[in-house]
Length: 118
Image (tube, helix red, strand yellow):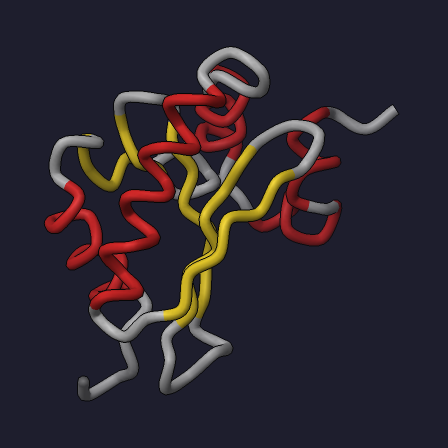
């Protein structure tokens, strides 16, 4: 039986992620604990990114809710952002910023998903 982590990211991706990040993922709160607050915060970040011309959609699975963000000029430059109710995080658990810093989090996400030379 595959671990919850392997099921969520897929076997190929799981092999590329360092074990310390797998442990971080296991410690992150999953559904249904903080879903309502997390969704509200992800919606706020979604609106901020859309107002800046970026593509962002809420995605729900059985295990979590995530915001899929795409660079409008290079859709292949995309990633999910999750929220634990207090902090926005990359799917592997690394923090991006507090939920009260939506504009700053949007800037960081856009920076990470930018085109080279942008």
